[in-house]
Length: 370
Image (tube, rainbow, N blue to C red; front, side):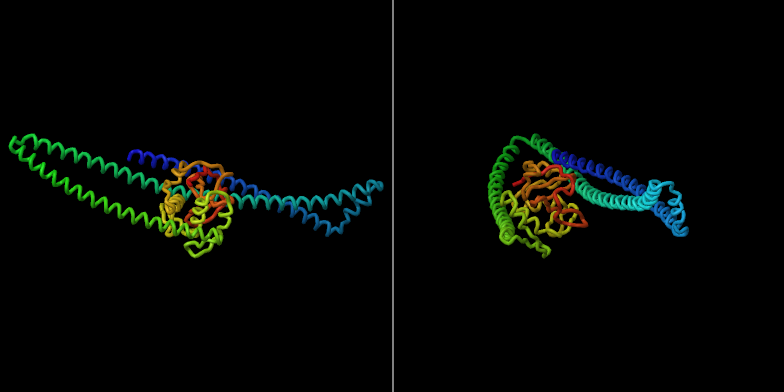
């Protein structure tokens, strides 16, 4: 029990560290956005100033009929001087056009940078929301384990007190009573043993029957899943639980084991289903680690329930050697690799279960379970 509490506490600390890191990234991104706004405002102001100056020059030339420029040319002392002044006037026109174009290009680049930074901030806020949900779930597990440990300690103390009281009563009995008690105890023990053996036999039989029934049901469910993804291997299409077809032909054309491909194709059946913090239902809703846990469970594999613990499950492989069915672990998040640089994962409460590029954010490790 103490080991479980310690493991959950370590996972909670890791999640809280991820949240702190994301918060720092958000603050830094907001500073970048503010700086980009200052640059944008300055560029727009400079563009307007250049535009107004050019309009004044054009208006002046129109009102004077270019007489000043004609006078400038007629005052040339030689043909070389005349050509030099003509080049000066041409350069002035060209300078106005080039400066205005330059400032317009600067305004456009800064505006695009603003949009990019806002999108990056939105992504960081989404990741922070996921990490906070997992923190709440881990704190709940920690509280439940601590309550169970306290209950066990109380029961042990009560049993120790009962045993001491029973020993004191036995010690005060006389020899005759002790003999009769021993005889009665012997007969009672014999009867209890017989009943216990019968009860144990019945319980074992019941447990065996229930285990066999459950094993048959699990096998049937897994076989159904295997049959469905086997059909998908032939058709290249898997029918999701919300009646949407998804093309999985790329999964079966990728390298890797057939079992891993089947797991990846099966996971794609649940695209479009909801994201629920702390959930493990593939149809009613699951969080990122609950989604991975339930997909592997339906194939008879028991994997850790949290994204932190999944970082140590199976064996590590490189991104270049990743195969369909591998688990891609991010800070506070996990997904199932489906080949061609893509993953299927329970993303956020807004987007639910969906397909994303495996490099949509930096990952920590890739684990192979099968």
